[in-house]
Length: 312
Image (tube, rainbow, N blue to C red; front, side, top):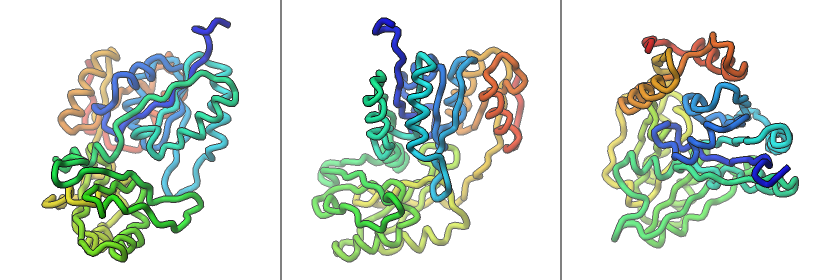
């Protein structure tokens, strides 16, 4: 087999969930994929950019629940790379920011499999854009630290908060569950009561923002009636003077189904997402589509409320 014919694995960032934030490189990888191994937080519409014959494999990791082990994902990557020409490992956000990309890279290298990391828009960037601020700001925030609030085996470790002592911004991924401990750590080391914003589902239809300070944010989050989805916590002066949302979003929105030529449906779907709508292509009865695609779309349609069916 010549070099150009060798299988290749793309470790692709799908962004924060809004398909409008998908990079052109990610889109191209998805379009040519023979198989896509996708995470829980990947918007199903993004999967629909793939070709009809592409196999979809859910390897999602839902927080605080049982999920497929990383070792099994690694094994699947090797297995599919030996069977297919183009394999896409599709991850929410940026695969290199708390996406376990290093473990998958090590596996691919060990098996001599060609690969490429395709960056995506990370949750911190999406969240701060929704706050109409920047992660850095002249004379306000001169540096930033990305950290995780969720550690292996649920260890109760402290996080690095030194950026807050140097006019910086702290972005905490996967930290909502441990928010009381994290805010207590900050209070015990730093006197200033920094502004805090927690952005759930950043940039998506069900985005919700809760704001406060290091001393108040825990109580405000505790008042929420339900878990709203993945949240990223921004601590620092860039989160100043931000207002909390007052109306909780629908967690299961009414969706619009599009039927007709794929290119036309995709174009309209992007317009609908620009308007804050949620749209999927409806091909559950198309036998030319890979059965894993039909199965996924059928499940989505059965589990959500249909607002409208548009035939093109």
